[in-house]
Length: 69
Image 1 (cartoon, helix red, strand yellow):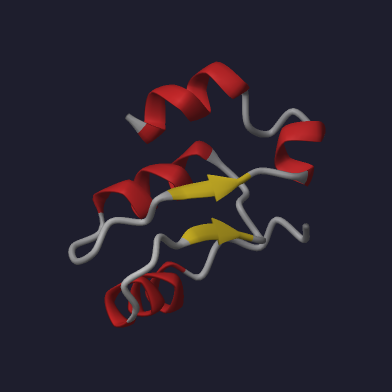
Image 2 (cartoon, one colour):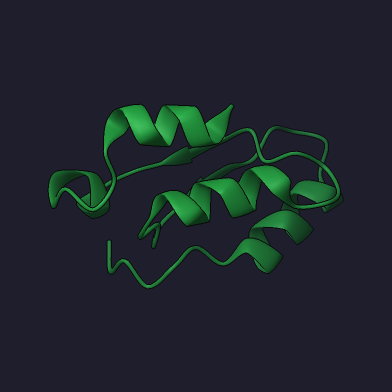
């Protein structure tokens, strides 16, 4: 991942347009991205895949879980 931030608008538009669960993937850089996905209006985003931000220590697993709830 490039840690450039998840495209919340596009991911949300996809979730609103289809009837299957959508999981955000790519670009997550902080717990703030997880909160923004959770708090957006419209069809909920089912989850998020963490990659480099987790490995690099930018996102702490316990903080990510707390932000997702």
